[in-house]
Image 1 (spheres, one colour):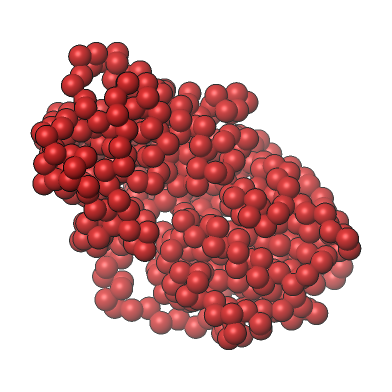
Image 2: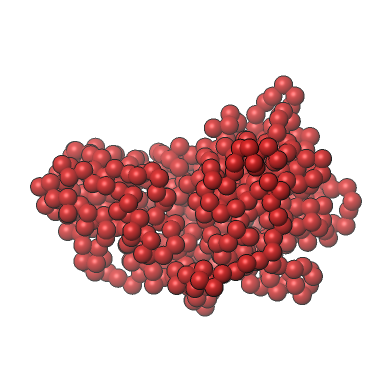
Length: 505
């Protein structure tokens, strides 16, 4: 999971606005950040590990990011490593000079690496599949064999990407001296939207992972980039759109609505906030249907992503809703932290219980999902330590039983607490007096109500049904070997210094 942004402006420099966009997308990646801008056919880059506010210093960095066109990225590493060399945007000089930011994960990255070397004669310097994607796009564009780039050339190159690349990818790329390209995989797994802002000297355009970035910068949301679609915006502000895939199928990742996205975002014409409200309603209906004589005294959410569902759940059950855990906002999202030990430690740093709301009560804790189970066990124990009589636990999502291969770091089935375990085993393992999971059909319905045209979703983490249909046991085994917590820890100990284009700022 990463956050991407790209701006073509007719009115002003884009450095500050790209910074602001990344700040609005910080929840999508807290590992690294980067911005590259284009001014008079020259590129200006700043990228490094760390939060947006730490990577970019106003005096040292921002003033040197010149130009009215640029792309930006916040990273949460999945495939590849976590060195600053793999911070994005990535760059290749041929053809024209292309800078690219990518959210997602390619499932045929290894095959493409071989093709790029043996057939395309391109060198790759990192393990990042984003570098693979960049070079595939660059090669397809180079095959157009033109010195004057047109929209037709861009769309033909994106069509080539769709033919060769499998997996999830939402992309914004800058072609030096020409314009900005945004495109999305033929399944629309990862989100990307675009919008415009009218100015006295022309129209500015912004492409971003979530609509909140547009809201903050005063852009009008025009819509989502459709699965397989590409958008090309020239430096002069001329926009073109084209469907570039043969058989696009709308299958957006439903986990975006469960956890990843901000509640004030609109994705695929669905308000995330309303979807989470409906998740709470569905969960309440299940409790009333399966446990009509419940003895729940109070509903307490595990902030922030379960607040919306938790409040509606409490209202439907007719019980008190209380903020029993106070969140330390200076601790990042524990879900995306590397290693079980760090995740476990960070839970107690991040959440502090108010004893008064737990003491002597039967408490229903509500979380957005249960993935590895680390944080859930800790939180249940914290509730007991705070004096709760009984601790029930509800998940707004079904059990996560299968790895996500499309850009969310759940690579190893063995690391998923629900994998291969019964409901009763999970209750005992987590330490809950009762465990309630959302039904998958209810989750799908909660999201689909917002946009009835969505016929399918990527629900692979719940049911093992991968939209790209190229994920088998061998692939998952290889993924676990490379992306598990243990594998990542080993790479961190060894270190991987690689050569990258240097920061100008």
